[in-house]
Length: 297
Image (cartoon, rainbow, N blue to C red; front, side, top):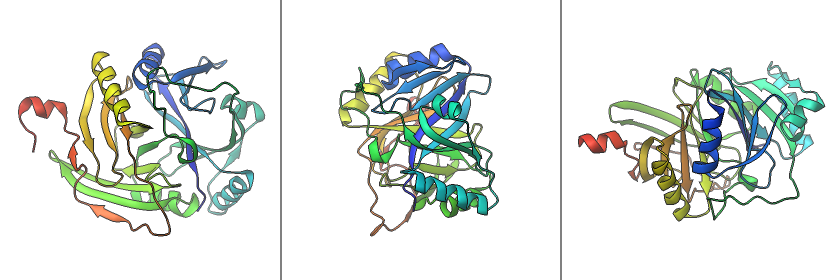
């Protein structure tokens, strides 16, 4: 039990200006700075940098940063990973500085996704207040939010994240949605219901990332902003049975999705009992195209 937090996400994107406009005008993030390599840093809370966007052809997830609570925990993780034969590389100080953290190590997960374990995120003196999200983003000890990764070898990924990084099973959803089989395993690393979920093989490294806000109204307002900006909605407003999140899904400029939600459930490891659900939503979360075609079940 390591109590990791989802610290930051890096994306390689084809259209950096489109992403900047999307991140600020739709998601409500703020620009925190630009790197010497032309990358764009984005902010959502007290930490200096929660997203790093770099121009490139993949339009995909480039790396995931997981924050350890202290150096002792990071050292223990590195030792455990090394003992299991996982190659972990300590970075140079300038590489850590580029991520706006004090100390940084790099490795790959079983799907080949670059991971970065770090401590000491930079916290600037100036506070951040989103111009659009009045209630603020729910982060702190819960981390940035969550993400759903492609896991071609589910068993190998589960062993890696649970046995080596200390994630715990929250629950699982196995069902069919409009003819598509769904089998997703949800894992928590702190009190957030899940910081990570592992699905089947996707076209990209991730299916979506999730941002949680402090009020239901801010979810509705974000949905309105997305519609007004011409962002393609992928699932209507709805509520999940496992994490109880009220949310909607829409498409990023890179093609993968984001979830914008409120009211996420917290886990108490002392009493938590994992459950397998046979439905992905209590209500809602319908694909808009099926609404137009009259195919809602």
